[in-house]
Length: 169
Image (cartoon, rainbow, N blue to C red; front, side, top):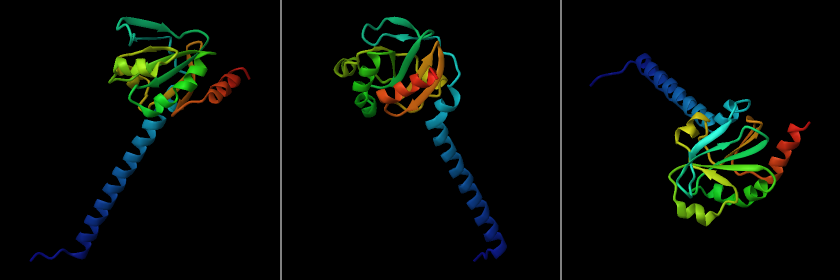
């Protein structure tokens, strides 16, 4: 029988406790950055155009977002919260240029069923990574091609109106 000296056991316990604590802190930090990454990295960045495929025609398109007030909504047809916010986005799109950026996997019949009333595009998957979009839905407000506001989760017309008012102050 091997006896472990009390000091050795305490050192091993301490090392294990520190290792578990460091891993827990890193996981928490990663989750926080995943949620708030776009909030931290996008404001002030320039987005002049979005390139991809029109989800209905399957043709390559480029959408100019370089001028005026533009709302960009990152969403997916399989995302319940994204589908839930469609009526709000329809209201928003009646007043502001609104672009839906769809995350794959994608089914054309689902898009037709959800019937968004604004233009949509399927960009390369890397577009989401480049913009630090890891949570959907996420909505951006651009003014003349510059990201001014970021919202993670479902958006409301009131939030967008508040954003636009803040631009004019």
